[in-house]
Length: 256
Image 1: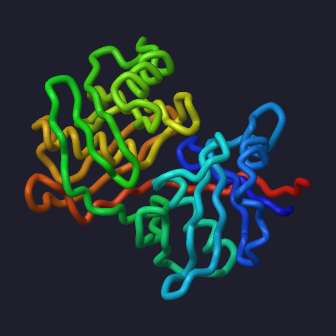
Image 2 (image 1 turned 90 degrees about the horizontal axis):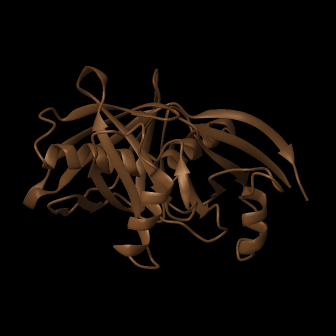
């Protein structure tokens, strides 16, 4: 099997051109083995590109644990870049993901991905919760550098959200009016270098909570910088949400 490795601000993915529908997608152990960083290729997730009617392609996403995942923002940007590399699309594209239709545009900054609308933002005293294609808990912290993201993220992921879980994002002020975000991702069950849907949720939570006045913000992750732009929607929701940042091919290879 030929595969490609892509990364988007350190969030890395195994990419497979599966337009012939030959990949054994029901074999969770096989997918998890490919994603294992010691015994496999190593990645935060695996993405299949498939043909679908009415769009340029379909993105099928698996978490590192081998099971189908919900929407992945950085993965969606990598999928668009991979489709362009394969000659499937030009300077823009439309594709299906687990949460529906998405658009992507290639810019000087990388890939801009239009995220799904957010219908509801739940404001709690200590955190904010919303679904940006994946469920996200967003919590403000003062000392992000010394926070044990793995331990605290895992605790919140299970204690508040049960086995189904939620991604857990910790946010603090960044340079130049932007923000810094660190994320514990369910399915990976660890902190990742970046999470696109998490960064999106963090920016929207900062706006909903009054810490952000503009309709756009830069976000610093462990793996690099992303930008999020949006418009307020009805009933406290958000629409016209765009996630922008780099998406880079790292290498290609073959595996059994």
